[in-house]
Length: 311
Ligand code: MLT
Ligand code: MN
Image (cartoon, rainbow, N blue to C red; front, side, top):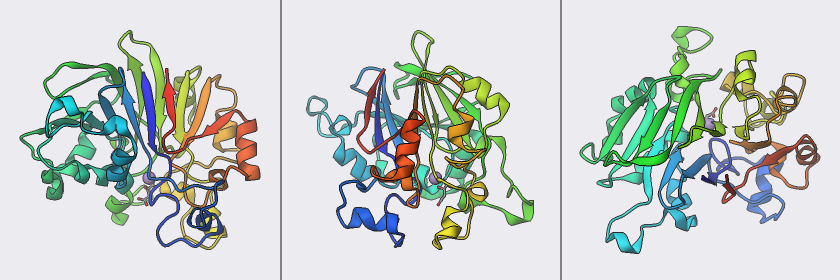
């Protein structure tokens, strides 16, 4: 299988448009140690010819332009795309707004939970994806699903969607529903990806609020994981004066600290651990930071736009 990281940054990208945090200034200044990044998304393929997007970021138009694997193929005529399907892990702006780039009459399939499909169905702007060509297929939590081309033929791999601790999308929060804003299991999912022989290839988990025992047992021994790298410390946006929310409030566990990701995944025998969905304030974005050194010493990689992995 092949994976291409289309975007490695969290919501808003790196740098966020209105952010003057010292970290955010570096890509604007052209600092080679801190290049700009688009919003998180993967392209995944069994054969390197046809691709499935894991989430559709608002930067998708640019991501398609930047990655020739996603360009229309000459031999396929005047309208074509190697993108056969999009799998959504939540309804966050940074994961669904990119669907609007995939207008209008190009056949592909959107896979998402019932909950996330309900959100798309309730927002008629998504009908720019002509329903005659773009199918919406529900994924059941815990049930392996073979991904297919629009004609029903196999794309050569499958996903098992499962709930992870998290939160309803920011723009769907309902304060009348108490501390969890009406979040349900289907709001935030992760994906286990299996090849056609049934062997687990990797996990994709761009949002995770907490490492539970159940989740740790599930990912133990995995060959590869892409994991939520949103914040370095829970209160970094408040501490640095650029925001009012903690990571926990946004549904993200932090990289550092006793309850952090480095500690939680240290003893799970995962061969390759890669951070994705990294916020504009997180110091691991810069290749010359002490925090980057720390994550690398702990055996982690920081994904970057255009990163390719072949399994
Ligand atoms: C998140 O990952 O917490 C969201 O993308 C935040 C947002 O929508 O800004
Ligand atoms: Mn996000």
